[in-house]
Length: 428
Ligand code: HSE
Image 1: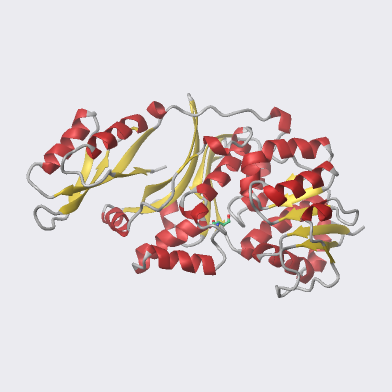
Image 2 (image 1 turned 60 degrees about the vertical axis):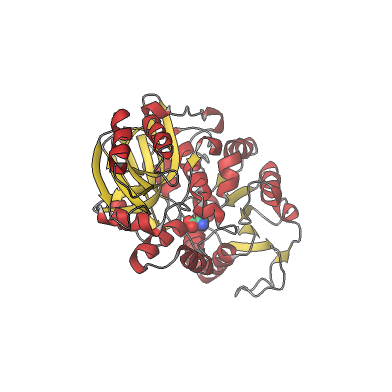
């Protein structure tokens, strides 16, 4: 019996998914055990040329009508957005017992546990492999391949746009805005690129990863997120001089006092695996017992990568494979307690712009010494006396609570021109 797909959203990903379903029909039929055919579509513009033939598909102006259509078995939601039409359509589909495949990380990070419960109550499947790390099958890996493991930490590069920007800025010296524009043209960036460069997109992905890794309802509000707006070309160059690369990392780590969930620009040693992940590529590292450390790498954004994950979910459902959305029954998902900042250990990179005058380095070093923070290295390339000059330090291990106090004390120094830039040094 044919499995009928209703496609909501015909952007880069939707068009690519439709094209691949048609182009690889024979292979997909063999793997799904039945032909998989797009029967209905809903998008903003009916007439736009997307390079696919939609003439045989029923057009729906209202996605919520497609969601409950008798001619659809699997609703594929590729509109995006935490609430609004996407959520309305997904809720309607699940309530009607239709399976849902979505790439919508904002919606899953916010409403995932509730939607999973709704799916279970109605005998439907909810799958969102495409929501996290594009073409890397990391959710499947956690839920299935690593199902027997106790996960201690999941971390990695979760935003292709930021990684693309950081690597291009380092290798070509191009300006931030110029590289961001290219990422948008290539279809990597979110509709609002602020979601990429402010860490929101990575935070949503991390919340979903944490949920599956630690058996908890995803909680986007528990993820502390910052992006790469404050990372300057200067930081990229200083980091290089010190033997590091800057990467926007998502980290979800279990400790005796809770789980830390954060997205932030970090320094990683240039010899580390994550330092070698360039461009739009994503990488997710899982530390778990008994497997040890597993690293998954692949394209994190773009039509083909994301469509690949959408197709995998469609084929799973069409083939009759059943799985809990978060790897376990929705009712059994717990809540995560945040690790207090006093228990979050780490070494830091600090860049402070100070007026170049006698005694300033001594004052800066004094602040760190008073807080019990040990300095590992100091860099200052002199400019003209009495002008602002960057002083860069790396520290030995301290805690986040202490480094926040240090930042406040440094900001208060008379010679400080602006608050310091702080980045954690991650050497996992
Ligand atoms: N905008 C995202 C990124 C892709 O750059 O990684 C979709 O999640």
